[in-house]
Amino acid sequence: MDFSKKKKQLTDVIQNTLVPLIDNDFVLMDLPYYSNIGDVLIWEGELHFLKQYLNKYSLLYTCSLQTCNYPKLEKKTIILLQGGGNFGDLHVSFQEFRRNIIIKYPFNKIIIFPQTVWYNDEQCLLKDAETFSMHNNITICARDKNSYNILKRHFSANKILLVPDMAFCIPSKNLSIFCSKQENKTLFLKRSDKELNTTIDYSKLISETEFDTHDWPSREKFFLNVFFMRCFSWASRKIPVLFPKLTDIYASVFFKPNIISTGVKFISKYNTIYTTRLHVAILCCLLEKPCIFFDNSYGKNSSFFETWLDDLNEIRFISPTNTIL
Figure (spheres, rainbow, N blue to C red):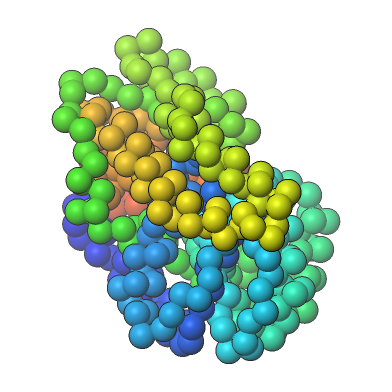
């Protein structure tokens, strides 16, 4: 399958699965006011999805976990929670926020956009499953088959759906305007956080010395935009009367477009890309750029590839045994 057919296939799945569920005005919470470009791409995809397919309803409120003031909502208002790869006990603050939403809004429909699920501690999993079961109208979208199976097995009181990553809803033309001139260079975009798979000897699989090896630019360099975002988020916690609304405006109007353009400019200048980050591979799909990628520390990338991308000609996956899938 080529890129254009794959993008249409995945956006069709998203549209057909989610549009029937969102039947009233909504809020969008847990937005990523931080430097991970992949999560910001998800946010952008969610907004495009809501604007294109659900414009007869209104987006009433947006927030991050730092700016959320838990507004009073009508019971008919739907709560949409950001997708990504932080459902579980690996990124504790995001899951704690979801639990708070469930407790504070027992009568509102809640839809969690596509997430990868991972728990190191089974007791945390069981505790979350119990908390989620106390709410009678939660839909959790799994981003891959492994996550879907975990949720179906343990979160049986909730509606579980298998849905691709929301970044696929970004029109390619909206990203191409940021593209740099392509150079004859190779990039190994290697994540530098706790999700890096340290059991893989990358030197046996690729010649890193011949590549430019980096993480996302926003993780390696000082960006004034990211610094201001951190300052606004800090101020939102310290001065909750004034700063949350200003922070939400700054994040949407200035931070989001700037950080997306940073990611696209960086990726687009390379003609060959290897990566350990899922959203580098997804961004390559959107830009119709070939890519080869490796797994992360707990199987997120391989499960997503096997669920959605294994029939895509230009995206390949290298397993630790040096097998190209």
